[in-house]
Image (cartoon, rainbow, N blue to C red; front, side, top):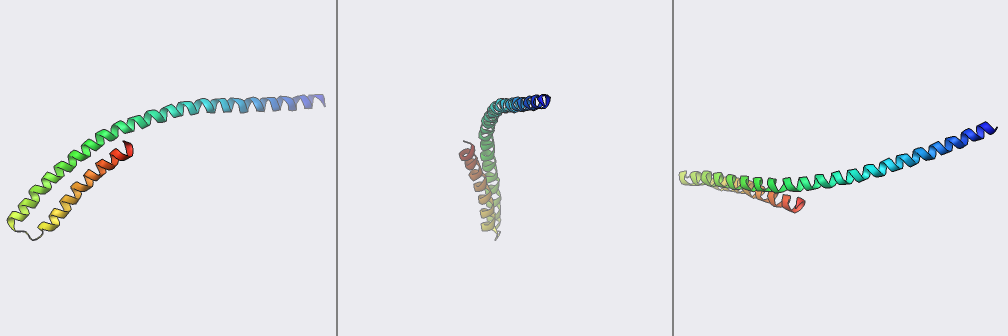
Length: 107
């Protein structure tokens, strides 16, 4: 009977030790995870600034191309000039809005 009680006591002590080590390992891992998430957030914010600049530049280029195409249609007397104006202006406006939203979201 003494051996069985001693075995159960050793099992309980081993279980407590394993739980303690698991908790300790998880607490250390969460500290490293928080640092990794912080680094990732900083990196994404730096990419967001570059992405906003690229998107705004694309908006300018699309706006200029659209202006030339609309002028060409208007000059040739094409009846779809208003449709072309709306589609090109909408595309440029969308890109500018996306650039602004990126700044607000990751800013």
